[in-house]
Length: 511
Image 1: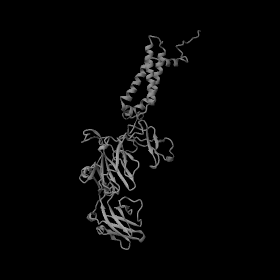
Image 2 (image 1 turned 90 degrees about the horizontal axis):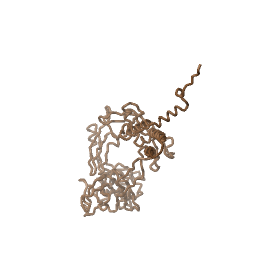
Image 3 (image 1 turned 30 degrees about the horizontal axis):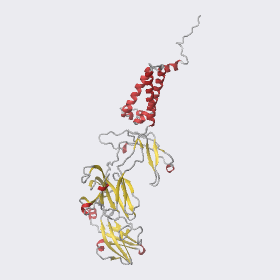
């Protein structure tokens, strides 16, 4: 019997499978296939952002297809780098099969260019950083009387600063920005610039006014007086002088950007006190494009929009650097709404009565919509920037209405702690040129002035300016409605004194 010897084609040698893999990778069809896959992947990343962002998860119901990646993250992801790596390996193996001579030099150059492009893509997408730098129009430099160096604050809507020295402070607030302001008159007529409106309230009961600043045109700075009918140029009331307070110097200056915020990362910043430095807590794997909520009851979609499905997050931010102040605190991100805005939605409250008043307020610089709740403390009173106060109260019956609408009798409460004296005096009895003596004491009091709300600052309540005389000493005291702090003592120039002249005497405005 002849022994059968199998041929080499019938038995796989140990090197046959690696050789077949080697031949497959260096084949033309492998290179063409990889180029097609890379083209499809790149098209999804650049031309079809919804697919890259994760819309396939909504279409197919497969949650792991919710990639939630930016374009830079998509091309820096390991699948793209792996495909480029396989393409480069196949291209190198295929190129090595070609003899390098004059006739084939062009092929080598083309393949070398493709390799250089692939390697450059990996380096580019893995090293490039994209982000945003917040750049504001400008920064306001403020130098008030008594200050040796100017202070500053960023000019943006509703920005506010309290500047000055003790006894001479200013409350400065940005009320309007107009980046397309056209200069109406003068040598620069018709030129476009940014206009900044500031509302300025001297804290020493001075006159409130508005100041207009034009970026690039400091010589056109002028003040406006705030009157009941609107605003009036100060120059029209002051014989051509454009500024109400020439000692208050305000200029616009450039505001350089100091921080660069990365697009591909997310973080929260935490601290316990304004005196502490912020601690950065980086959030790895943060969502970017889709809603993630753990409680749909706290979400109110717009009309016609579907309710997002429950899709909770459970991400634990990690501290960058030392975070000793946050030790023992478990902070977790449980939801993300990329296009949400805070709003109040009124829900049925059963049989409980909760009166609510909604109205619009039109001020000289803005118009706002406000809501007041009669039976919620702190939500039933609104103090306007012009100084007036709006209160919403609810009367359940005629007797309650009569009590609420009865005209109050303004009084001045007087306490002398050392004598245990506590009495009230009607303001009508204090009016006149003569001081009214307090029985059983050395004090005599004269009412100098009643001040409406807002006279001593945009948020100040109504008050009284009282002249107090005791033996050989006399001083002024400013008493505000509802504060119950005994009042503030003023010097002869009506500046607030650091210490009370007479701490034994306490006054209270009862309206």
